[in-house]
Length: 489
Ligand code: NAP
Ligand code: MG
Image (cartoon, helix red, strand yellow):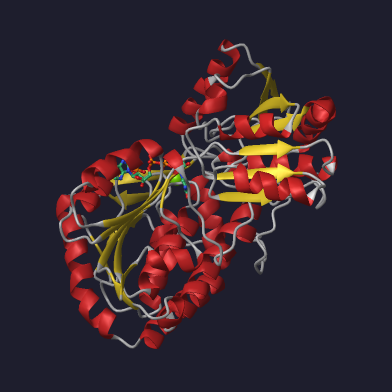
């Protein structure tokens, strides 16, 4: 059994809620409509799709498939709500946002369990990271609602209008919070589309929004497929697009927005380098590498999926990583001892497995832990590749699974050159005992976030976003406000 010491250490720094002992209290409806204008309404064309539990392949619920007509209805509801919302006293708007945060905390057990059921992530992560951080985002941005003049002294901050927001499946509730909280604090109204495989916590959030008494139409949530997202992007009544997802879809969206007046932010893929120097605290670094790649099954845009380890300690580090991987428990996401849950979907498992074959075909040496995995559901044992080089696809491309590619280096410059040799630029990590090396490396790695002697730490006060093909714009902190405002002299 995992002890607290050998569990994937992940401390988001926010208050933890107790674990759900059972799932009896979880209320998932058999069917969900679209949340438009403050009500759950049936989709115009009457179409629904299943959402399944990736750990059991069982159907959890049926969810509405929003068409262009539904998106149009949601955008019109958001437009209608915009006038009164923007004229409301900012402090009043702030109170509503606080209320969302408070209710979310009260229902944190339910949110955590639903997130794990629908998406496959370990309950310890949904409970200790996703849900508390999502509430923290609402608390943080609630505080800004009546202080925008201090955020941008000497300038007038005006909301943009209706924000269209499209999110991925790896952090469903947290991404919804990243999107909705700053948009509302700045006085915008929103139409949000969750990912196809993980709509249920967004639907729970819709219930919270309604219970918080937010005026009808200020928040609209439309479930659906890629076409639903495209309908939001292309709707002429939308003033801003906030997208988090793959670089591939990000490109399509950017092309669609070219020549329009819509403001946009794109948070896209990543292939972060974690760099271990020989002078690092090796055990601490090994734990950080494990967390960096295996947290949330490696379905993390900023995952440390490339490891560069200094040659003199490479053998020791690789052995320690393998030993540690053997202790990780893969299995039931609702079990508090689980370290690695289910892969989010059959499709994603196929993608990961195709990369395992590609990596071996390229001559890489693959190592997987020997832990048992359940018969049903989608699973991937923690995996690492050695004997790979810069040109290999498993080193260059985002796998978005629990797969680490390891290379060695001799000098600082070699590590830096290799780390920057990627089309992505979202995050990175450096492990060393020397402050000077930390400063030099963090300034030279072209990535939006670089952690030193830690990894995967998030906070609503700090901006997050990428360079190069990892996207544009920042979310979180003061920068996250800018993305939802028009600043005038
Ligand atoms: P995705 O396939 O790009 O989908 C993201 C969202 O866009 C989903 O809601 C998807 O709907 C929707 N969508 C698909 N096609 C669309 C189109 N043509 N127009 C508008 N919307 C469209 O990405 P994913 O597989 O869900 O998520 C994984 C990716 O997200 C990874 O690349 C990861 O690195 C990235 N990510 C980045 C960050 C960051 O902050 N930089 C954070 C988390 C994840 P469906 O679900 O119906 O397909
Ligand atoms: Mg699901």
